[in-house]
Length: 304
Image 1: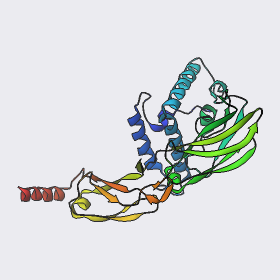
Image 2: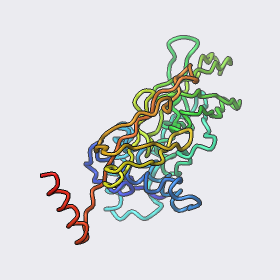
Image 3: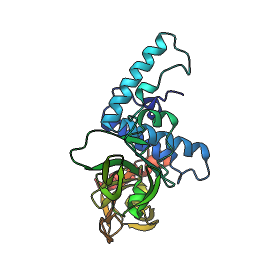
Image 4: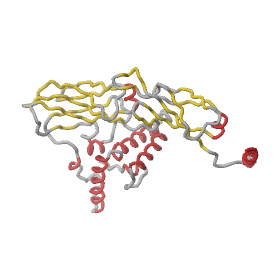
């Protein structure tokens, strides 16, 4: 199995801080997002690889484990280790025995992680995991992390859960956010112990286009200088489809426009939505022709 260098995939140094990692992820995810590369299989694979890297480096617990693995792997290479000879078993998650829980993704674009990821983090991101340990009472509850995309959180989604050979589809409601728990009553004994409730602990993956704050969403809208000065209409992405936004003349960098009801649905009240805020990012011309420079100089004189 091939070792994956997640730092190299995101193009960051190993001592990069959380903000640097997040910024690198957003830039790459925007570049390779399927919406910008329709039908491009290489871009889709790159997009999944980028999301896998950020799933690890953006999580302090996974990043710590990955860094420990990296140190061991590089030390093994320095001793002349040959490809395919590294012992991955010591890094695999889970402990044999106990209740077997498997969570399968249904068409999740952010799923489909590599064999390397599954071997190292299988029990940490909605993959197969064995649950053991001494319960405090005869009935015990189980928590299982599961990753979903922002679009799935908007529309609602489901996961197929296999519990000791049983296959159960669990609905994740619209409006779910990181930390949301979805309860499933297992209602079955396992050996001498009774199983209580299974809780899917939701983690909503960062989105390369939208930033989420509660039920509100934020999106950066790039405009050229002339459109901002003269005003224009521009197409804005929302999770329910594109809409046209009128930008008035004289709009300023960083100015926000509120699109009411275009944010996330409220958990347990899916008919109610937050708002979407479009933030203007105005790009100034870097190179001017002689004629453009002369015109700007004339404008400067008019303002004096």
